[in-house]
Length: 352
Image (cartoon, rainbow, N blue to C red):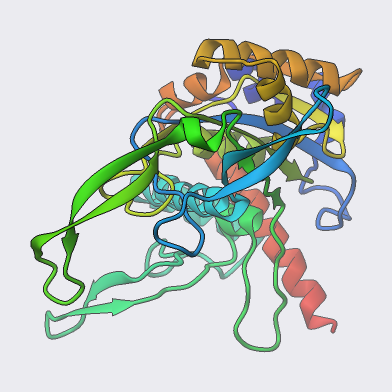
């Protein structure tokens, strides 16, 4: 397989010369400094199982008001998914891909890290995580540890990380979050499910029943994820993770199944569109059904892009079909980009 701009051409049919100006390169002297270069990823999230999307109240469905354009300031309350929930699922999927990649080719990953960050290879395996992991101690007993952020993998470089002690700096996320809105009224989207209440202590069910408000399968949510100052391989790696997001919201072991669609990618200086705008327009036009929504989003994205380059393809489906082995060169290059970024950040921190 190939990496970089050639991978964009081979996998998604992009014109390398058109999109090159909107990417960064680790060879740049100001690699870690911000510019206006952006990669806009319009995403359709489809509920394929009932979703439990709530904020505080267990009985609520998280919703927001949006203005429907062209209809005399008509406001509608619609289901929404706050950006942090999408970002959390995206990072988890990134970690899963990277763990599988490290498991498949640990020596290649360590060489990639060492090439840009000498002495920082993974000595105990790739354990970057925000969750608790089981580990066997010397007596064979299982202990649970939180390895924390490794600060030198693509997930850390893209999603950011916070440090716990002095002598280092936090890294802000380069993945701009967007709230995802469903272009359907809250009343139309809700499906009520009756379940046995589970005891919080014994985890057993009794005679009590309760009613749960969920988002019905088939509901579509619209949003635009924007990547800032990324390399071609970081962008492709992110597209792979977005395409493979599979669960969101509460009670994810029972509910929460989703599937994503990416009708196009726009390269620009700054954000070109938001989920709020897309959902309002879709609601005004009464767009129904997955295929109709994909076509609608594509046309709106192309109109908003103006003269900026647009890559049109069934991007999510293409990325889902690609195995991690087929994306090996892309992932390794993204890991080199992350290690280079970490090296420069450490150098800057040491001068503080």
